[in-house]
Length: 475
Image 1: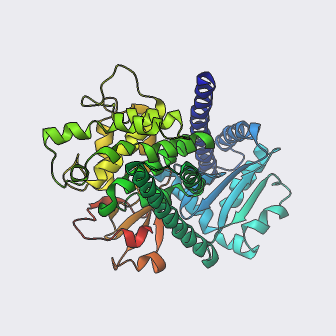
Image 2: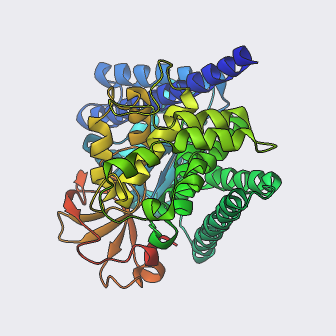
């Protein structure tokens, strides 16, 4: 069994890194396409420079076609996607993206049989005046009329209509309901443990499965919910947040669904030992005394023992409960055994939520972007550096819930990540009363104008100092 588990974890890691390589190849292909179009503006399409760049692009397309029937690129809201994955775009590619969107092209697909002649003919076509596209009823209808271009398909710009917008809003509403249900489930389990009653593990597993199913569909929305710090129910909310973050990282690393569910359950139960810690210590707003700290430090052992006596709890949950504080110089309980991979993931998720919640370990509430910087500094000492890097790639340099000051003078709330860690999607805030959630504009910082990025980050704004109520925007 341990060998099989290690094999599955190895396959998941391979899948994750293989996907990153694929995204890099897709970016390289788009860059080569940009080179073809640029060269065709400087030289005739029969010029050796144009032909050489077209050959390089064709070779890359053939590489991508090895495992698939077509190579599709889509432009949505200023972002570039290959299949379903966001592709990092630097400023040098914004001109090409503008060229496409200016001709109402929202997607371009390359199919087997593509030739160098077709590529140069396409480049020549793209360099024509916009009026040519308008006269032919748009790019989508123009290509089929050309006998030279038969293996390139164009699609119009995708427009997010009101129906899709309402689906997104319903998804956020659903996420908030799942979040609150998970907190209620945790409360019931903690109370059952304290009263020595039977724990409903079936309900606990159902809760985790629901969370995992929803995270797989909309990871950013659930990550955003971890910003909602519920001080009156900190212990329960912290367990749910740790579970959400650990599960999200599992999906980001492309673990199989059963593994993500195991992570989610272990995250929910990692702090069960706090059921044996006095409430006055758990809820103490200030710094703990040495004696209180020693009592708190026993909770990993107490948690493992409690879970060992609970029917239906996996061994992985017991191990994570015992090991989740075994990191860094002050890790506890101290034993000479390396943390399990799942325990390392839960430790990272637990620490991030603790930092942003300002409880016990940190005296002030820390904005998400600063919490990311704290964890980054601890990579290789307190936390697995590979996992920290993956966590930062998932969360972004500016995680969902970060309030940004833009170089245009605008203020934006991070709502989703893009492949560029410095250029997320933001909701522009103008009234700061929550009304922008319904009527505000959500834009990507990858959006270009005149060959440059339209907006860039000038700094961050502390939402707690500015009294911006994140709950109005993230639920």
